[in-house]
Every structure is written in structure tokens, then in C-alpha cells.
Image 1: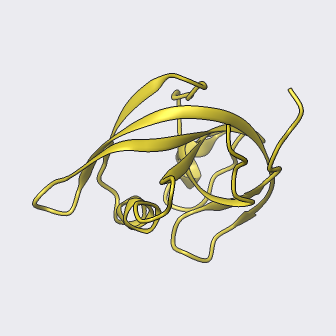
Image 2 (image 1 turned 120 degrees about the vertical axis):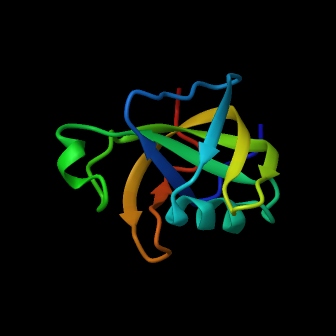
Length: 119
């Protein structure tokens, strides 16, 4: 399996965990995550990291609530754009990653991740 890039976009959700080799359908509707999909799609492979929201995320959802420090990178194996700008995507889990640093410069979260963490 190829190494992960050192910086990947992350999609934080409550109660959703992605595992390697698992397919996860997602409906992308928030403007910041629509941008994330558009930005990730031309990359090869088009990757998004999933991260589980942690703690009292409801109070900070519109901002950047805390996430767990381990996530799973997934490849967008199908991207279906909808007429109103939303997307239906199918994400295939690839490998876990530890988050080393979070960046918030693109309107959505990005994470600097350890490229090849030990199992």
C-alpha cells in the first residue's frame, strides 16, 4: 500500500468510524465539506481522512470541535455530484493515521499525519 501524503483533509463526524477495507457511503452537503471534496477529487488518489468527534462536540459543531487523535484515511472511489452542489461519495478505508497537527486554512480541517505509522 502506498504511503499517505503528510497532509490530508479530514472529515469529522460523530458516531461514524471508517476502517481499512470498509466502504462508507457519505452525503456531503455542508459548504466547507463540498469544497473539501472538490479539492480532494483531482488528487491521485483522492483521499479524505475520517475523524471521530470527541467530547461535547455539539456546542462547537460549526467551529472545530475536538477529534480523536487516530483516524482512517479513505479513497473516494465514487463521487457523484448533485445538481445543487452536494455530493454523494463512496469512501473506501485504506489505513489508519495519527494526527500530529491540525490546520484550518482551507475552510475545512486538514491534518498533518504520520505517513507510515507502525501497526
